[in-house]
Image (cartoon, rainbow, N blue to C red; front, side):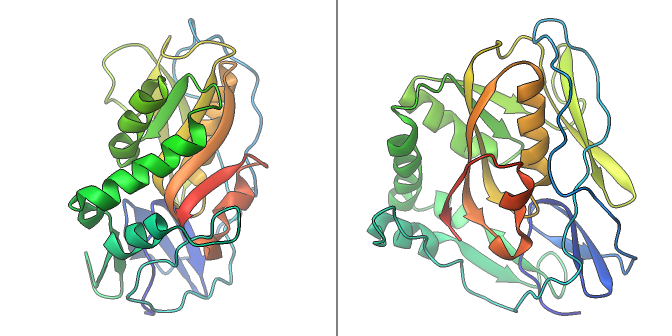
Amino acid sequence: MDSLKIFNSDVVIMKSHTFLYNGNFVNSLKLLAPSFPSTCTKKPPTSASTARGGTTGRHFQPSSHIDLKPSCSSHMAAPTSDGLIDDRIARITSAIRVIPDFPKPGILFQDITTLLLDPVAFKDTIDLFVERYKDKNISVVAGVEARGFIFGPPIALAIGAKFVPMRKPNKLPGAVISEEYSLEYGTDKIEMHVGAVQEGERALVIDDLIATGGTLCAAISLLERVGVKVVECACVIELPELKGRERLGGKPLYVLVS
């Protein structure tokens, strides 16, 4: 099997293999490629104060011909709006470690723990997001489990917003509203507490990495169902060859490293 870049969740199709990935690694299943719709599907709005339970599936169409070149280096730093490379982005890029053959041979794992071990690079990461969102009247920072919980709270505190965790099933103790989305031969879902957000609030959705965009798409749909305006999605890392941003239904995406 070819060496692979790492991914965040959902399914990647490459050549004759199907790769089911969860966390920041990929498992080869050697299955036929499924057919998923290419963008988020709109659902009827739901009251944030009365919503209960799960919803119907969320599907995506990954490319069946993705050429992923083996690499042992972090993603290249993204340019700033003026076309220059911010020194902070270069520092963040160099702080992200890529571990080959973990958790099994043929897999490249993008390890952000080395970024967290570098106080300067970690602060640079938070500062760049805060600078972008501090004047956008955002009242909700929604963090996707699990690494969205690392970056979301400090951003929320700095911009004066509340932090809302979007969790895997059966992790939240109170009444929840859920959004289900499809994996290869199965489904997963994310949940948030009923009443955590209110209709008309403005939200930022944060995660560490976007691959196919499945989890972010589910998070967007979950928030929009209860009348929240999703201003933007933000990730530290993007795997652009997987075209995840194209599956966000036109929702803006901001990344530091791609």
